[in-house]
Amino acid sequence: MRPWALAAVILAGTTPFVAAQRPTPTATLSLSQALEQALRNSPAYRQTLNDAGVARWGVRNAYAAAFLPSLTTGGSLSYTGSGSATFGGSFFNQSSPAISSGYGINLDWNLSGSTLSAPGQQKANQNAINEDINFASVSLRYDVTFQYLATLQSIAQADVARQQVVRNAEFLNLAQARYQVGQATILDVKQAQVLKGQADVQLLRAEQSENDARLELFRRMGINAPVAIAAVALSDSFAVAEPTWVLEQLMTVATEQNPTVRAARARESSAGYAVSAQKSRYLPSLNFSAGWNGFTQQFTNEGVLLGSALGSAKGNLANCEFQNGLIRSLPGGGIGGQNGNGTIADCKGFSGLDATGESLLPGVSNGILSRNSVFPFHFTSQPFRASVQISLPIFDGFQRSLSVAQAQAQRDDAREAVRARQLQTRTDVQSRHLAVQTSFKAISVQAANREAARDQLRLAQDRYRLGSGSALEVADAQNNVQRAEGDYVNSVYDYHKAIAALELAVGRPLR
Image (cartoon, rainbow, N blue to C red; front, side, top):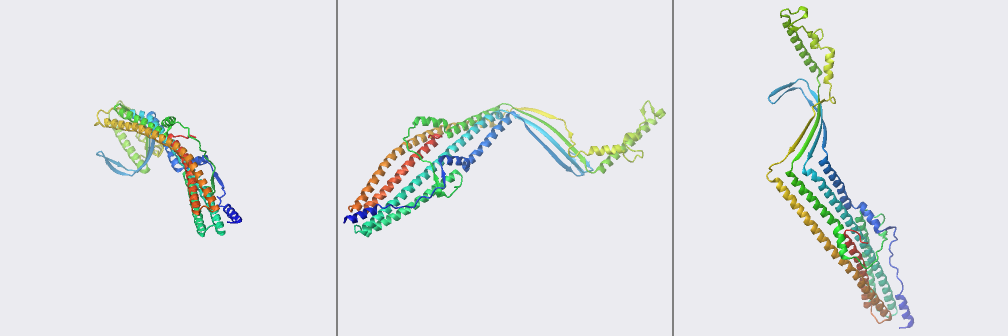
């Protein structure tokens, strides 16, 4: 080969190629911002938070049931038409429709072993729910952190694919330059074109995976991306450092602080209170009740009411005059209006009739109408009532014994659930601690493989430029270096994901 031709080939092989650039970011997102948004907006986490309010009211309800009486009040309005009715074998006739109202205030208080055990049981349930919320928070942190790392990993893989496009473009330039000076065949050029096309397709797929990872990150955060998804840049980076956590310390922390273990212990405590509540059914229970009541009744047909009163008044007048006639018929009757056996009465004034004897006196009529006008709030109070009851079941067909046995079985199951949760937690911590160590060791191995692949590529390219190597050697070397770089990226982020999984097993952040 002529010297000037060889120089042209070398220069052509080193011509830089500008690949498709990454979109300019218009928004950045740090891991702390992602976690803050997730805690505020994640639907699954917010559903768990809703249980806290129910638990708080459960505790208040238990204390109120044990130490405070229940108080209820109510009112009523009713209408009864005129007519006749029978009740208990007696016949009743109501000549006028009536409207009525009433009120009632009732106080009731039950005291038993079950009500006294309920506050402790509800407090234990509240503690269990709080630990469930803590675990949901830890799980959400893991999910978001994992996806944040997965997104960074997909971005790094896209950069690897982008670099491979650059290498294949350089190889295509080199093959074309060698072909122009007669040092390569058209087969080399076509092979370089195929490799370049494959690299372009791999880059497109890598960019799609990168955007999918970003979308999944925002979904786990519980929000929509504020800008175009490809323009969101992740600002955090994670350094690789040798893990120094001591396994026994991690297991101790996990046993004491892991929310799932603490929730299981709280449910065991709740089951213990349930046993006490069932055993208390062998003890007496106390019930105290009291009530205040009142009513009104108003006849709507005042004419019927006044007519009935007039009839009663006339009957009273006739009876009074009959009595006066008997008094006058006695010896000495009527002398001075009285005798030793009776007194002559003013019958019309006594009966409430006027001088004609056919109408009620105005004052009497008005009084009757006033007393009838009581609907709806002029109540007639009923006597206050109160009662205290003490009960002690003697025999209930072994129902209490069955309930105690069932509660004890549930308590024993809860105790075993605590032990099972502790075993699972210790196993998870040990497994993930080993995974962190293994992932860290894999990074150095993959780094060495990457350097070896890069050296292999440089040698293959130099041999091809000088005419002693083949295009196939370069193609194989480029594929090897892309694979090695991708494996290195995976090993780095597998290490960080392993740390996140270890934090989930322990139940709290470790870095």
